[in-house]
Amino acid sequence: MEILSDVHLIDGVTANTYLALGDQITLIDTGTPGKQGNIINYLQKELKSKPKNIKTIVLTHHHMDHTGSLYELKKITNADIAAYKDDIDIISGKKSSSDPIYMRFVSRLMAMFTSYKFIKPDINLEENDIVDNYRVIHTPGHTPGSIALYNSDNGVIFVGDTLTYDGNKVGGPPSFLINDKEALKKSVKKISDLEPNIMLSGHGKPLTENTSEMIREFYKTL
Image: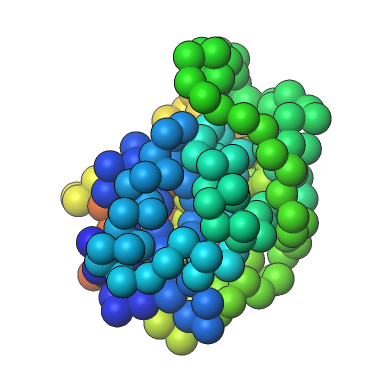
């Protein structure tokens, strides 16, 4: 689905996956295991482009519904994988997550019953790094290495699972999926202060109107 001419949402991959078209093509998150076909089909049919034109895959955080098809997409595209430094070892499989027990249980089940494979990211992101036209904003709370990606030119911010929009109101992760409540509150404030025009989250719908105001209203509830 085209959100802007240079931003596209790919349906059917469980967690939302996006293509950002700038000086290169950047893929943001990869969906659950086995969803690489959905992403490549969209790229080829809707954008008339080739897999090799995806130069970077950015992960908003380490959860498997966002990294599930990473291994296969790396093989298909040979793109550089970029993730924030605090989630790198979890994505690589070198370290277990500090998620709440429920999330760790779900992740283990998904790994057991899918083709999920760990892979080491190529790029270790830090605060204010630039990926194509997007600035890395560290937004811990859901996971220690959660990030947002913000482009001040088009006003778009990709927020991963730090925020959601259900078509009616802005929310955050369920309480049992929050790694650090105080860190999450600070992260929402950081996003609010940017005053984005369009918010694109890992779950839910695109928020394209009254975006900054609705994020501020949610922050007041934390």
